[in-house]
Length: 334
Image (tube, rainbow, N blue to C red; front, side, top):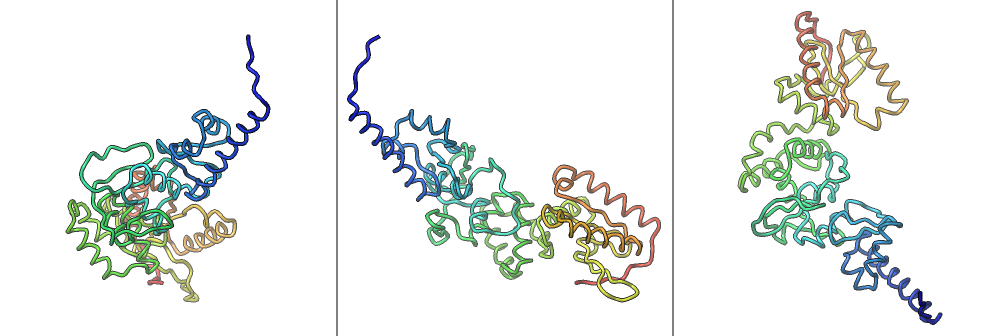
């Protein structure tokens, strides 16, 4: 086999050019939430083979066709949103916009949750890898630039949630915003008028009465909606039980049927997992049992994967309590 001699200087020059191209791509990615378009990487001098090598050995990924994520990716949500905009254009909307705005009441983002993009005109809603197109016009007055990412305003985002997401997402966000005083009842009435005026706005008609605002976590909202669907809506929310001997607050229950002394507590991940919280919850529950309360406890797993079992457990507890009704326990709103 014949070998072609290449001058050492030429090899060094080629190596230097490759390194400079790579540094330019990295610099561009860091300015764009750790994302570059594949065509821009080529334009800056990276060959397809060099890109493949980076993907194979250095963790570069391409969750949206035509883009490259350059680790470390500091904010996965922004990287995905910027990549989707770079490929599809339009405006970030719906659940993705709600996440970018930091609206409360949303569940954690799933690894493969698509980016919602609003595009003018009409077309199919088939999901592309990494993003979902929604054919609707978003005027400039209803958009905002979030550090380089064109996104619907909070006002418009709330409208779109009613049209693009399911009830649990929409009610969960509105519940949380009410509870945290980011929205008022009057503003929700105004939102309802705007949503109703839009095409398919009637899909949310039954949801407005289910917005409560006393839920202190998305899990509480989810459980309340499950109970409401089954005709088991609690008599009271955030019900305060007092020690009958001292009159001091003993517990505030997420959901309660005081006349039956049946209550529900929701245990979300995080605070309730701490040793101090576990001890406090156990002590409080034992005190409630001494007063004749039947306290049911449910987690996210129950609400998502065991919804039917959750409802049947509550139904059975209420049925048993009704057959052996006790005098109402002391209580009142916190």
